[in-house]
Image (cartoon, rainbow, N blue to C red; front, side):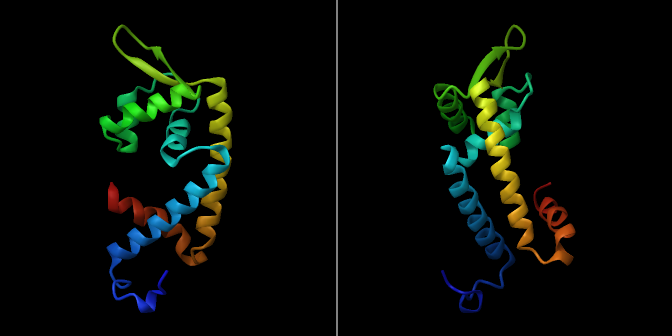
Length: 140
């Protein structure tokens, strides 16, 4: 990996943001391998947690996952016994955690919380309170 001063693009905000995101996603993905979980899978487990009313469509929207990717993701989680579908009303189904899914979700939460603590520790103290609002400003 090149040092920032050797990288002619290091002064580009978008490039730096992408590099930072890729580094952090790589770190989180590696940590989640300890529980045999991908980031997308952990995200679903954390998003639905103990809720009983989240549909696949709402999950896809919240995580910005295309329908073509959402179906195999949920099928993978369901085949591993982590989620199941239950009727909400006559036409909608919720995706809920199974007991195994709740245990895996709890472990994913512990891993992601430690990841978040480690991530924020890398930011100079005087910038920490500004980081999340600045990032949100880019996507909200």
